[in-house]
Length: 185
Image (tube, rainbow, N blue to C red; front, side, top):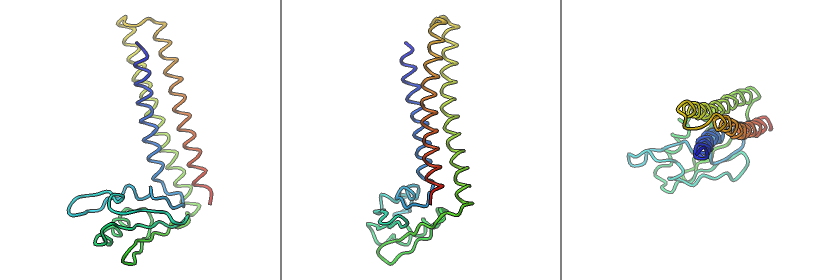
């Protein structure tokens, strides 16, 4: 009976970790990666459309992104949206392609980004712990209603804690990896 709860907990915690992972991917680390532009949407014939649906975004060099729209008429709109996205990027277009040089990060900016990464990971940890808390409350209620025994309740707590520790460790590894990435030149 408790196995269903364990599966649900794993699923909900995986979602929390994946959300944190996606948030961390969008943080600029000084290296060019097409994912930096994933959040940008461009108005295309009155519809807000993701940039990756309108253009080919590549990183031909470590510090350069290129955006080649499938429809050249929206080149200016794409350039305007990249500037408006407040990513600290200055695109330039030559009429066919948009080139976006990725500037070096200053030490102060790196420290700001590391603090932000710590906050994102802590939010992920809180989400994982909240899942644990919710299920532990359910176990307590089930035991009070005599749906499970005290031994099953304690077994459930122990298993949920093991699952929680696993996902917290995964978040800590994400933090270490992103912090290292931000601090290296």
